[in-house]
Length: 247
Image (cartoon, rainbow, N blue to C red):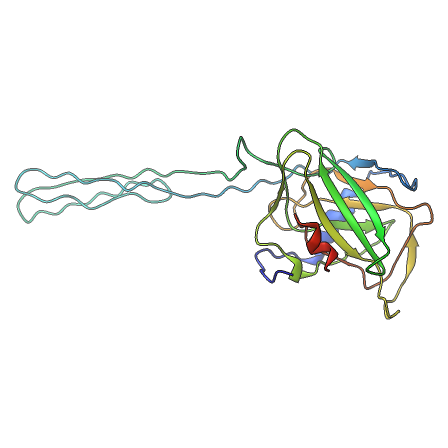
């Protein structure tokens, strides 16, 4: 397990995201189905990494010294004078911007339109479920944070195990898969409010905590449904399946 805590999420805002994502969706519950249904949500917010500013050079007239070095990250010009010998100089800097992305072009967010999502009940560990998201698009896609789950008409959002937070956002090349684990119920029976669900809506997050990552997915559940209680929680998205198997 990794213990890096780079990103934070609040339950209330994530709950709003989950409820919004589920507003107009319908799903299937056929056992063994490999299809998932996409549900339209708000457009994703993108994140830009701004870096910048080039350092300007100074020039001076004969008998003088160079002017002050200029240039700031926001592109403002800085001028200065220094005249021990009667000379003056000016310099200017220009700001620059850079946007993060994967090689070959900007990455997009993984969501219900460019992925196939499956939900598989596991025999071991007990009361666990594996979520698999495969990139079916033509571009690399990113899986920020963790899946926002909603069983049936559930009015609360399962929180993530923060110890599973990866050091970097999971990015899937076309055809690659990402994974998340779900603890459905307490093995010792200490959970409360247990019930059986027949529909699962999975919402994707954007590059900022609790923002919409685009259309949700509705992976099929077994015909008999899935039992969960108040112990329900999830992992962050992971690139390596072994990290989920060891959770």
